[in-house]
Length: 267
Length: 261
Image 1: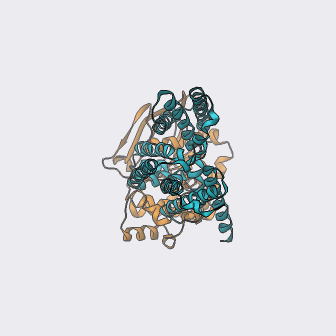
Image 2 (image 1 turned 30 degrees about the horizontal axis):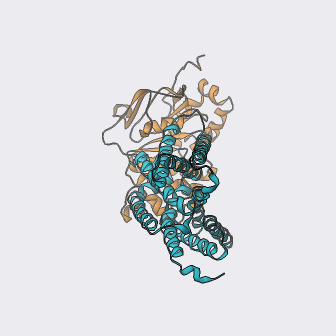
Image 3 (image 1 turned 60 degrees about the vertical axis):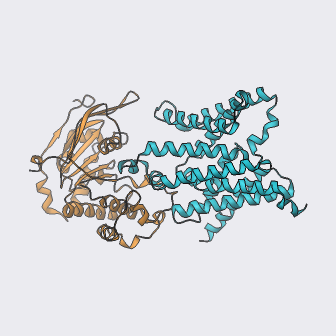
């Protein structure tokens, strides 16, 4: 075990990519927690796997495939939410796992073995390229600007949707744009923590931040800081002990969450 | 007397169907300035749906909602629906969708009796305090019509009377029309000008005193219910004796299909 690995270019690239993602999953995670959308996020991630499968099948960029299919499922969910035949969580369960099944089957058919694609499920941040890093930071800047622009409306909707609508917030529009950003984040996060752990990286830091913050902005900042810490700690753990990076990042985030539980009890 | 003036809002023949189920059937309701109208009905009677229709949040299958020109509505949602997971100060809650001058903020919180809670966390408020904060929030929009959804739900008896006094004062000082919804019978405010019993359609309506004597009311809520509302009103009338007589303007039973005698 040697610390010199932490100065290797591949490690620095992984760290930069992970931090770029943390900056954005922090605030996004807050909305996921506020609006109780954890299962929804999970569904978008599973839908992303279907996009990866289709991307491999038809030979286009898998990240774009993941984003497009996440978005498609998100829109489908908005449309289906209006009906009352099937409860929303049941609907999420159906769509989520149908998409997961399609993804696994297609990837298996195209590549011969799904086991060779664990990186899609759990991330492979230690192999990110320079271009990946730049792409992630451009994406982060884009998503960040959108969130900043919609911030007030998003918070109003999170506090009380009907109240926001009654007071003139264009809820369907804000919701749609937010879903686009969630789908984008799904695509960015895929390479870093993997599709199965994206929800963890959004929800856990935000849940930990809830106990530390007194304002929505404070919670978003704390959430981003905790996510960034989890990325750094998880990568160090991965480099030093040879653990898989994605799950190590998530574990670090969970560790911080448990610490905040102790803090809250002392108050 | 008020009937001569134009209503702030008038819903005519509102019907709404969802998934083949009739939620509202031919509901007529109007609220004038300085008038308190209370809608009561059991759970699932369509009260929340009616509020959403009045607020313009839901499309209706039939009927129309007429608003007086440039009507501003202050909506006070049920406090249990305010998400407890968003960390907010009272100041922030009050300025969520529009900015307010500090003087206006102070004045309104003084009016609702929670000026000392301006910087408090919403999560730390008691039920009555949060209700007052939501009321202040609605008042900051300088509304002509206040729509209150279950304003005294799970507030203790003493707090309930104080909230009703506050609402009554707001009507007097601001001259607003107030539309209130409640599923608990003993929460009907004695000062309501009109009580409307809703169960998909309007079963009966009239003054609080008149409505409780209505056979339709007993049918909807059971024979013991009339006693409950009477007990509460008796208590309240000690403070506001002058109001009791003015409310005897009779009631009108509405015979819907389901409740036809």
